[in-house]
Amino acid sequence: MICAGGGTGNFYLSKDRGNTWPYSWGIGSQPITDFFFLNKDTIFGLSLYGGLAKSTNGGSNWANTFLPIYSSYGINFKNANEGFVVGANLQNKGIIARTIDAGQTWQTFNTGITTTLLNIVLLNDSIALLSGTNGVLLKWNYKNTLFTGINDNYLDAIGLEVFQIPSMKNYVLSLKMF
Image (cartoon, rainbow, N blue to C red):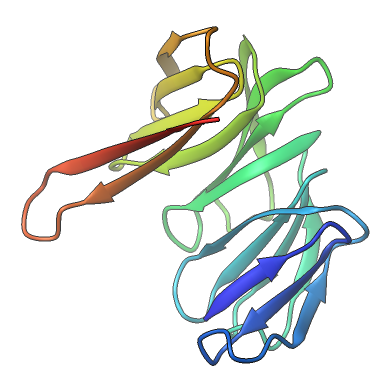
């Protein structure tokens, strides 16, 4: 399965490796910023101003909710109950929204840093890496709500991906400078 979204808030789900792209769902008129596949049935679509679409049956049916976050760019779910969305608040401070009840309620964490958080990668059961505009790269212990990080003002934005080496417990960190 592959998802693609557009600037009009609509997204398309291909179940045949991209050969066809039927309309799947929409989240208002907000640009789509990210997708997350928890498994083959549970899919999340995220829009710029906090719209969240969720399907629990492989994209056949969807439900929309809205998050307590002004601009949202990255989404990651640890399991069916615990998930995170990153972005910024109205004061342009990096913000994280977290749910531990499958999206029924959301708690927000303000980093206090002038940035728009773009990505969140969960490394284990308590540590996440976050990247954002203004060269922000943070390590977050979300069990203790403790942030440590690097701020390099020479970069506009950092994209972040972490890959686990299948046969080892090591990770490969990939940074993309924009």
